[in-house]
Length: 456
Ligand SMILES: [Mn+2]
Image (tube, rainbow, N blue to C red; front, side, top):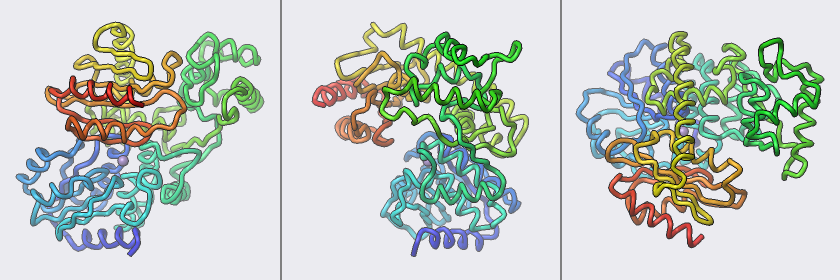
């Protein structure tokens, strides 16, 4: 049996269940929100009723609560594979579909149908997202769901599966999205915000790829444009990249490559834009990378339902989600300010090869990883492990680990080793890892982390 057979088989089982109440549980990030939106749209088309929860993590308490509810069919999307033993323990005599791309479970149960690409040698961290798995399931139910392929692509981008294009099943799903006129691919400068932000701001905020002397400085970015005879303004309005003439675009691109001449891959500034054909070009939903940021912002500020509304094309929800994005950006700048103001306090420990920030209640647990990512790309912090902690609620602390520098690291392994000693749950991958730990273990976790970093 191959992966497609297993998708077909799961779809057949669902088709046979004509009636029955449906419960959806999905993950809180952009991928999980896309996954959930795809299945919701599909169920709506089938005139089926459902009830939804979007959660940060699937733990025993939550599964126990689920078992008390009275639904006939459960869908776990973009999560669940790791918790099959628990699901098996609590949810019996109901049909459970797990559509996930995380590490699969060997554990089996008659009522649990696990659809997971990793079981068939497909790399779930690279070749397909949770939304992608759900998309394949829904298209197996009905080909007309092909028009949801773009959501699977946004999910994959949210899970950082796009790297100079897509591979594997993601590539096939992208082709479906293009064929259905949902996505248009455009070669462009690979800089975040290129379709929505003024060009000088895009240059200023460009950390990956990094532009020496320009990244991080608004005035240098404006000066850079002036030197190229590119007027950054159109009357009183700042120009975006798309407002530039073709000649100006070419001039700008070659100038950026020249600025980067001492970097490892100076020409590494090109990439694909995945334009959402049905959305307004310069909106936050106009390009897949920004769209996924918008969804992440919804999830992180605990408004996942807004994100689902955006995916389902609800105009009112879209407006609210954009306002939420502004709030999210404020949370991020607040977190940076808190760090700057508390650098010298006992909550921040900086040593030769590591930086540990314990923000406690001062930064949202859902934003703390973003702070670590931003710091890992900033100029002041080089060749250091950056570990940040903040509390999600009064008993759970979120830990994030990043590395600033070009050395090969395996952050997931480092976090997993500490978790093994202190307790908690590790997640993530080589270049961005994290954990959820019990708040009372914060101090012990930090001590153990210091030991680990000092040995590295
Ligand atoms: Mn995912």
